[in-house]
Image 1 (cartoon, rainbow, N blue to C red):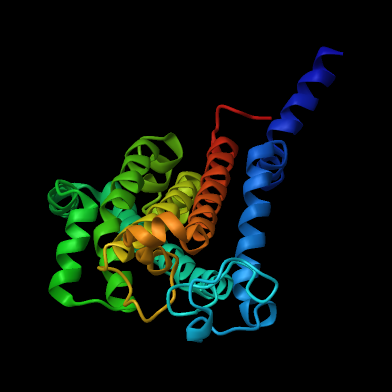
Image 2: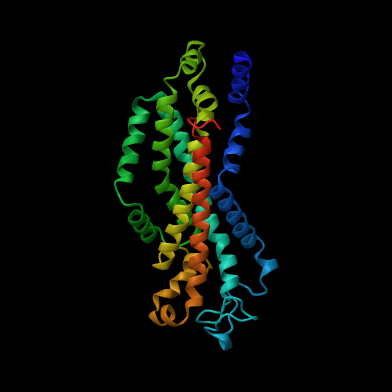
Length: 295
């Protein structure tokens, strides 16, 4: 009987890791809620032309600052643009900036961290020093300075987020490699004469994908908030393009802030819900990737 129980436990532990991860995520109610919210908002933004009857920049001066109605579900702004349409179309750009920046930063940071963390030596010392210098500045201030220097545009902002976001990805990947490189199977691969590139990217990186995915989700939320903050200050995506941050920009006017809540409150709630959804997904992925929890 004891042997049967032992075999059953071994079978459970050696089961498909993907299935175990999915079971853990499915058992996490906040992760499921976050995933549902994320998909709803993402699909709504992608289907903006089908959902909304107005363009994001269509002006109707006869309906300036109109409150929510059947014609305009979330009202209009100070020049008559439909808020509901601008939130949907603006979400496309804001999500693209957040996710694209996180993926670009992960590509650079994880690649450097994986190889340099395994090889160590001069390359690791150089990249580590560069990352320390960049991380010594508050990121929002560094981004603001670079936007002022290179100018405002969607692609400039995306590039700046990537260039300022890779150090944290690098340090996370490097720390994972430093712990994995001491394992016995890595020493066995070295004994067989397998190349450094193959060992680091083929055999070591696969054991660190969990923390990497978690970092990507959290970085996506961070970049979306940074885009909103910069656009609110007038330093983000140019104001003629609808983004969640640019919609909030008009709330700098105290008259709108006090008397036209529909201009800023709905988009503020959307940003809050979307960032919360991403954080819930990230927490679920972190728990699922935790090797100490084998459920």
